[in-house]
Length: 354
Image (cartoon, rainbow, N blue to C red; front, side, top):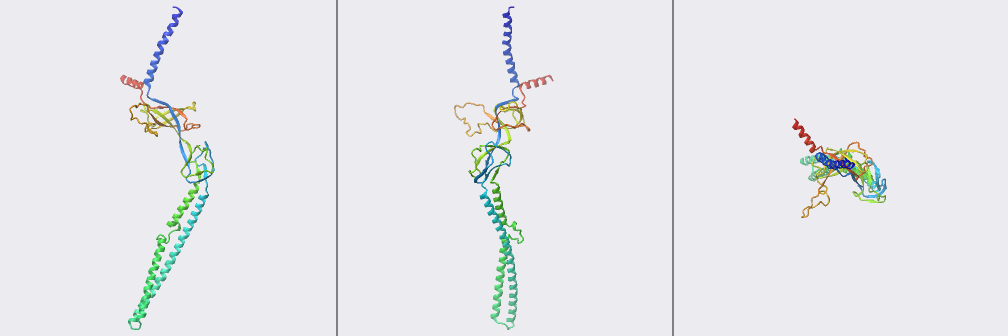
């Protein structure tokens, strides 16, 4: 055998083995496919909170700038408090006036009671005088003019008593029909207390605080002296305490995907870190369906395109979140626990053996 023939035999063996290996490998992949679904169309997502003032006014102090790390409750900026301090002082003065007014009503009620008692005593006296005059006149010892005067006086006394009693009722109504009501329980005073508390609350809102832990975003142009309108977004807070992964899987991949399934995640920024996560939810529709301008396929030249469905994954508790930023790219592999073709073959074989 020549050296040339010896060299040709290994080459022929390699040429035959390579296609065979590819066929075996492809068959194995095909048989074992379906359990693990992966995609590189994934990214970090973090809640973004719009920061606004509840009040309108001029900004006097700003304590943060773009990319500042903040804690929940940390002061972000302050709106000019002077107008709201004046409003609080005015509300407190109105409250004091309301309390004084109730004390005056209470005093007026006591006066009306005294006046009613005087009117009652006067009526009792004049009615007794009328009876006496009637008796005298009946015996012929009195004159008709004296009797008429007694009748007139008694009638006037009854009218005075009625007026005094109406005064008592009016004074009692002003006290809410309860003469013993506590001053601060009176509706007028309660309304003044609410107005005072609202003014105090508004004053507290002049200092705007961070609603959560996070990073300030797009606050470069926010400076003292700027006039802000209540409710208008000024900048954003990226909430670092609420981080999840949004992976966009093809519609052909989500058939066996369910909440609670485990997943492995790798971030392009941190190739050495291994993360585990759990499927939290599978989107209710494709990304295109919920876009601002959803695709319209009612035309004659429609071309079928594989759609993607957003899947939300939550990183395992205790994961290293340092350095994770909203929008960072990730690769996600979800274990759907679905039975593969290879598993079905083995299961069938075990059944046959039994």
